[in-house]
Amino acid sequence: MIARLVVWALRARWGLAAVVITCNLSGLAVITIQLWLGGFFDRLGPDILRALGVVAIYPAIGFGIGIVLAIRDRGRYFAWLDQTRKPTPDEARRLLRLPIAITTRALALWLPGVIIAAIVLARVTPQDDLAVMTSMFVIGGLESGGLTFLIVDRLIRPTIPIVAGVLGATMHWSSTVFVRVVLTWAVSGAMPLSMLIVVLADPVSSAPDRIRTGIYVACLGIVVGALATATLARAVAAPIRHLRLALDRITHGDLDVRVQVGSASEIGRLEHSVNQLAATLRERTRMRDVFGRHVGDEVAERALASGVDLTGDVRVVSALFVDVTGSVEISTGLPPQEFVAKLNRLLSIVVAATEENNGLVNKFEGDAALCIFGAPIALRDNATPALRAARRIRDEVLATGELDIGIGVAHGQVFAGDVGTDTRLEFTVIGDAVNEAARLTTAAKAVHRRILVSESVIDAAAPHEQAKWELYGDLPLRGIADPTPSWTDLPQDEPSAPDPSTNGIESPADTPRPTPAPTGDAASGPPA
Figure 1 (cartoon, rainbow, N blue to C red):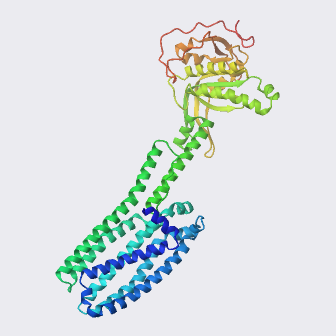
Figure 2 (cartoon, one colour; figure 1 turned 120 degrees about the vertical axis):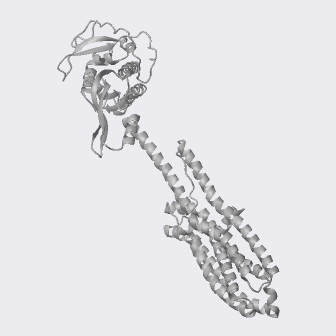
Figure 3 (cartoon, rainbow, N blue to C red; figure 1 turned 60 degrees about the horizontal axis):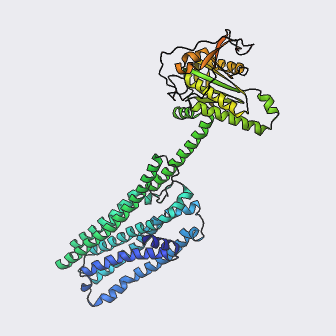
């Protein structure tokens, strides 16, 4: 019901004027009833009509002026609403000042009327106290002004979401929670109690008139206080409840939250802040997702947690390198987009096998990929998952029949961390193990099983994984002085069962190392 009245008052040409007139009439009615109950009209005698006629002249003029100004204000403050468009920034800021502007003007119109009415009525009834009469009209005017502010402030509330869309996070001092609470207390508590004091201080009224007027003022204070307090409580509690529900959704990961900004107070600022929080978290999640696609989820989380500082440390890792055989010849005979599609299918296999074995695809280098096990997330055993991932990558890629590859795996100390500058960082690993893995990859392209791993990887792996590999031979690798003992995997008749641990943490057992096979020579290929 109240919501429909508010919408009508906003859209009707006479709506704002009706609100202002109602507030002023309510203040005048309170004063009139108080005078009647206090026996004032009985003391006017035969001059009652003339006195009331004189007193009513200014209120009539004031009401006329108020109506004209209210109609003018309707067109001035709500023209954009009638034209079904958004307000300009100036119109939006002007609308926020509407409650205090109309209230100030209403009090200015009341002031001459208070002076005129108090003087005229005091002259007609010389036995009445001028101070009591003046206080009564002043309190009535203040009550009317406070009620006008609260009602007009409620009237413009449906337009606040539109204003917030134009101005963003904004508020006006006259609509703060503090001002609303103080005005509500004044209208529902301070004014009725002040009226009661005036009634008790009237030296002319009889005891029965004072009692009757005091009861009226007390009942008026109870009714107005209940309505004003309930309205204020609802105006504060409802948006706070919506904010709590919105924050609960954000806490549970639902970032598609938007709270309607329905107030020009601190609550409205808080509603806007919650919307900004959700938007910031959505953007952070999007950036983390995009960032994670480029550098891996672990590196993305590490970067977002530590900022842009250059950090890193020395780790013992297993490096796995994958490279396509004959990529130049393949790319020459295929359209670029078709070759890229083949590479994407290959790299999707590499990413899946690496991440499911708790590794990190550190970088793509054209038709090659470098995968790291043991950094940035440390593993108690990083060799076993690296060997497991190498076999899986080889099996799945060769099963597709699209590309041929070589895979090299090495184990050792590397620097794992950020390199670059404050404006551009890259997480990488640098060390002999990475270089060795790259060299083994080149040699693995000529090996029947397409995988070569250094002996250090086999030594660090779990016994059940060691049993799946055999010594291939000592290979001279470019840049490495001594020949490198290298191993390749044994043919498996059936797919191997999943290992007991999927996180790279193994429980060592005292099982014998596999017996080395006869060594071959790098130039002569694998042993027969």
